[in-house]
Length: 568
Image 1 (cartoon, rainbow, N blue to C red):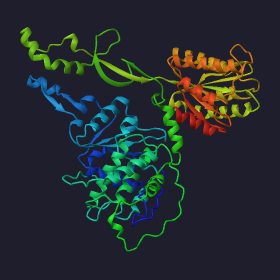
Image 2 (image 1 turned 60 degrees about the horizontal axis):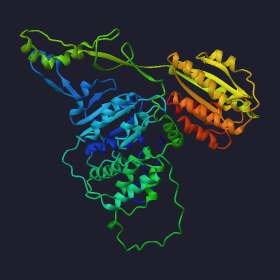
Image 3 (image 1 turned 45 degrees about the vertical axis):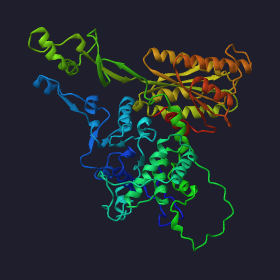
Image 4 (image 1 turned 120 degrees about the vertical axis):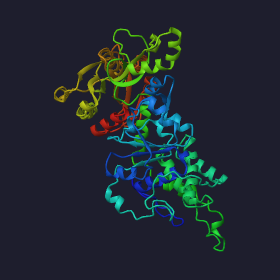
């Protein structure tokens, strides 16, 4: 996110805050109104983040994505229950109001994020500070969780020198607040009411930014009220609305609002009129200017990648449940069959509440375990992924496209070990398709196979998809998760039977797309034509795949787009 400042033309509020100041201001607003949900802070572990965490309530509880359900929600205190002879329960972290600090938030699994989201929805004074420590720009916190946090601040480009040069008292706090702001819950502070005009204005601004969530304008309203209370104002002012919109709406925008056409200048207002009678008299364009200055440079690319990742997990391969290895999952009732591993602690917890009844029923002392008490360990592991490049090698521009694909494959393979990826390359031209590079992670072998690829002839798109499908089936049998990336300009003219029939070629391509989709093979359609091709967009819809129009893309941009779309 850029550290630009937005210049507005009214009052003393002539510069918006930079990332560090916005972070400290957001913490102060959260302290006033926990109903804002929380803040997502993107920053690697280091002195800058440590300085910010020092401003949080020292009694804040820290959690991590691997924390157990029992620690979150509470449950049976096994030691106390066995000692006392009756059920003793302990409270979980989510049962108490106050701030929670979530480390490694970008690694939170879907189930864990859903639990936190439900706890925030209950509105019981819980506030979440999610620390996004992702090393790559494409790593992100689960959208179900980030949607419920009012603020999102990026401190990646903030240094200690930047913090040291901030004069005291400009982080949004009133003169009576501690220097630099902080997060200490404020009790008993009455928030001002919001005029109807402010409700309408914030809703209009959210619509202009393409925000379809009702939480966004509601967060903006609450932030405006908290900002007014922070400065000991009894009424909402234009500055409160402007600041609140910039803090809560910029990171949620799905489109860049176009500046309104300039109208003829109106005559100057009567200087004798008291301009303070209507403190909310601020044009939407001024507020949009403040939000627009905080929009990231690559907003549209991020949105395309977000759309491409919908429903496809985090891109690191399919999740597979088992009972031997991987990430631990909560145990479940089950039988001790071959290969099953007993969760001893979970079994004892399930049996403990029934001990008194079972002792009385049998007349025997001791620990009574029944088969219904058995809890079986479960794990989740990620399979390796196979990325199958299916490249159009036909026509006069084939050499250019193949050079782009070659460069993209080599760039992706350079990171294959870190992402556990395998790569294959299929080229289609003339009347058929050919597997040029079997699944591999060897960069040396890839360069050797990619050297001197032929090009020219017709465009047998369906044949290329069929060859890619065959490779995907083989990969699935070997435990890999295949994804087909199709690079073409979309002008298919060779059918599966080798005939030069454009209409039949398009029909065969659609039929192969249905086969790929019905078999659960993930796909990505990259349009390399000079103009977006409607036929390729329709093909992507049939595949239920992401469609990325990338005319004149070089190898670097191509590899980045593919990695982003796949969630790397």
